[in-house]
Image 1 (cartoon, one colour):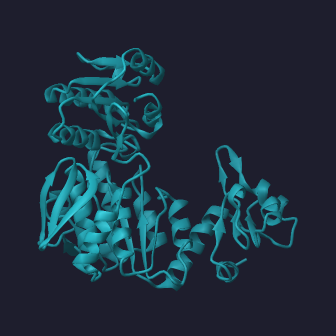
Image 2 (cartoon, one colour):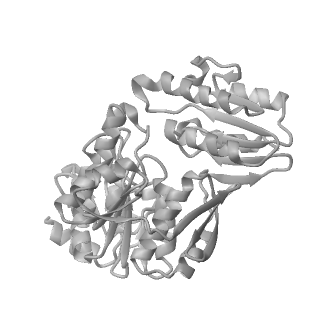
Length: 418
């Protein structure tokens, strides 16, 4: 069946699902495959649960008139998403970067929602499956789309751009993330800059932070929209405070590093003619969740939970910011950072060295890589070892920064810190 024919079926309800545990009535079910699952097995079940049609790529499972056979389900999903993007013909903002992508995406969406009907990437569904699903979640009512694009290898951003065809782009930064896949920091810069290459080739525009020398250098061949110059960083203690013209904005985001994320959202809002008053309302009303820079007040301790993800760049920024916060007793709990390749131990040792220069009251390192570093502070090979220590030596009246890669799942500590 041709993409146009599948699109005609999709456009009856604008619904797509890939998991029979969450099937919606009148949806199109795409039977995706993974290393440990085969969606083809569930095509008939999807129809029984209310799917209008199921798309499969193994002819054995085409045993129902509502099951459509294609050569490749994933490729069909991606082609359908691109076809839909062309039909919608709305402004699409493409977003990538090493750190802060999801927070920046949420801020941009929050600001633009003050004046438009927007559709943005949910959570961090930002890969070769998530980007098509984001596009296909847009309906004829959507006025602006915001698409987050993630990558851990070169050529991935370039491919995602061919699916979502962004009209505008923004790269949050170029940091030490996914070094293993990109082959080092130069590979990161090259990979993320694929967004700029697409924008240049298609005569589109990039929002840029004029204080980021790499952004300025890599975007000099295309049309750029710099951060608006009537923004001013004021302070962080612990939340970022800034001014937009005469409007003081008190955000709910910690860390000076979040100022640029807010500035990007303000700039994009300004470009799309959202008023300063509405921008202020949006920024002040945004509260982070999902383990991203959350402040949690417990009975005895205050916790800054930043356990969604970590890499050397974001961890160093979080530590330096934590030092500036005006609190009497400070403890840091740091978990391993993943996907750093051959430089992994070296990068972990750099973080240890940074910590020891900052002189926190307590510091606990947890994970097999941090366990191999040289430090005067306490090290724990496993989460269970750290937990046992904290149970026997409970923390009291501390401000605690918890940060580590997603795989460390350090948010589990919340149940054991009072």
